Amino acid sequence: MEQPPVDDSGLREKPNPPSVPKADAVSLTEVLVCREPTSDELSPDIRFPHPHSLTADIDGTYRQRFEPDYEDPTTEPGRFLETTTRALHVEDNAFLSNLPQPWYSSDGYADKLIEYLSERNEQDRTKPFFAYLPFSAPHWPLQAPKKNMNKYKGLYADGPEVLRRQRLERLQNLGIIAPTAVPHPVVGMAGEEDEHQWDRLDEDTRQKSARAMEAYAGMVDRMDWNVGRVLEYLKKTGQYENTLIMFMSDNGAEGASYEAAPILGDQMMAHIAKYYDNSLENIGRGNSFVWYGNYWAQAATAPSRLFKMFSTEGGCRVPLIVKPALQTRAGPGAETLATDSIITDAFCTVMDVVPTILELAGLQHPGKEYADYAAGFEIAGSGALRRGDYKVTFVPAPRGRSDGSSSTFAQILAKRKT
Image 1: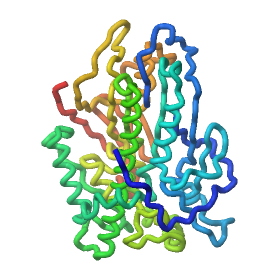
Image 2 (image 1 turned 45 degrees about the horizontal axis):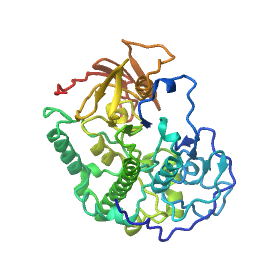
Image 3 (image 1 turned 180 degrees about the vertical axis):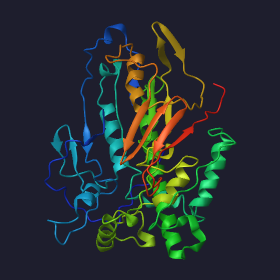
Image 4 (image 1 turned 180 degrees about the horizontal axis):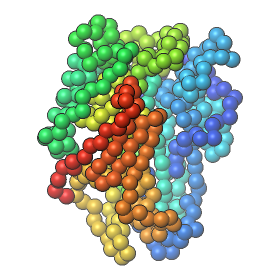
């Protein structure tokens, strides 16, 4: 479980600005439900003792808390970039002016959750707990400790199309997708770095693009280690087997290519060139600011179409890993042992999480139940409606149809033994 310390060389620390956190800040500690409650604990009036919360600005202080010394703080960095650089954290309603040093968000958030769990006394441990640990990694800007990045040095040198083919083959070999699955064609647009034509790019562009992916992999590596730390704590304290654990992503891979964005793109690239060091050797450090773009994202979401910010499968279909508690309720008075692993492509959404937890706790859902329904969703002008195995999708130009029409497809679900 040992991991190297955070490499924070070259970082210039500055205190958090005296700003009020946003009302929609993301809560850190509120997926772990421990122990089947006894009958006297199943009251709707149940309260979780000693609630704690660490909130972070929704895009702020992602990794190593670097913010430049702006020439004109009254206009810089601008509304959009401000959400990605400001380091605003609040704990139990108190603004934190300083964070532990060295600071790396994945480490800090896992540290805090373990701290909260360790504060539970013997009496607390006879009751369920609920904890929510949303990492900001691996969102851009892509930054990771150097030793985590070094594990992946050279892995992405052949470009996103080769990676896409390798991952598709791996998914088929693991039985996650059908051997006959045909991946959706890669979708690009004018102004983006054409990593799809990898061999036509100059060497410097290829190296920097691959290095951004190494930073991304390092972030995932570090996050994985921190998830392991939380699980190890639960095992050490005898709580792991009877804890329900869910791990999921919030959306498909991030494929934004801001260099190609109208208006915003030029302003953003000029700001980054002015204040950040995106030289090859510095990519991944706290004073760099890179993303990996459209083509690497489609290597991650294949065989599905597109990526985050689209209502297509590539934008909204994500993995959900569930480790059940050793004993879980399957109905009144019934218990099942969670021993075997399965892969399922059953349709579910985050809306299913609360009813699942309530059912495991033996509580009645207070709202309506719908046995036959259509699920609809929309984001940034891209919408979809799904019912059963059918889904109608709309993607606006330039990545979708310029005539405004939608596309319909039948999703064929592979039959697997369960």
